[in-house]
Image 1 (cartoon, rainbow, N blue to C red):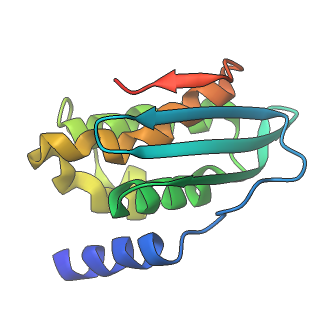
Image 2 (tube, rainbow, N blue to C red; image 1 turned 90 degrees about the vertical axis):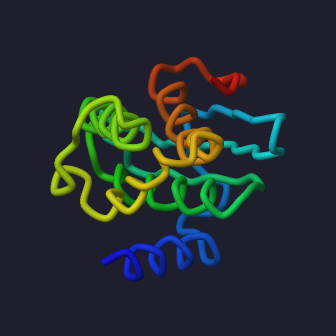
Image 3 (cartoon, rainbow, N blue to C red; image 1 turned 45 degrees about the vertical axis):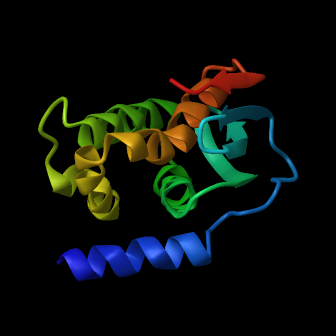
Length: 145
C-alpha cells in the first residue's frame, strides 16, 4: 500500500491537477513558507455555498504540489462546510492530533506518514490553510504557521 500511495503522490507532484488561475474565481488567498520557499495562490469560484471551481498556482516542494493538487480534486463540487470539515480532518491526519479514519479522507490518507516528519507538515498543510482563508473570505496573504 505504501508504494501505491507514493506513486499517487509523485503523480500529483509531477502532474498537478487544477494548476492554473481560475477564470471566474470570486475568492482568492495566498500563502508562503519563507523557511523553505513554498508559495501558493489559490483561486476559488463559490456559487451558492458550493465550490464550483478551484485552482492554484505557485511553486514549492513535491509534498506541497501533491497535497494542493489532491485537495483541489477533493473539494471541488463540495459545500463550504464539507470543505472546511476536510481541512480539519486533513490537519488532524498530518499532525497526528486525532485519529482519522482513512475512509473519511480517501486518497488523501496517503499523507498520513507526514506526521513522522515535522518539517514537512507545513508543506502538506500550506494549501489547506490557504483554502480555509479563501473560504472565510480573508483573502490577502496567509502566514505559515
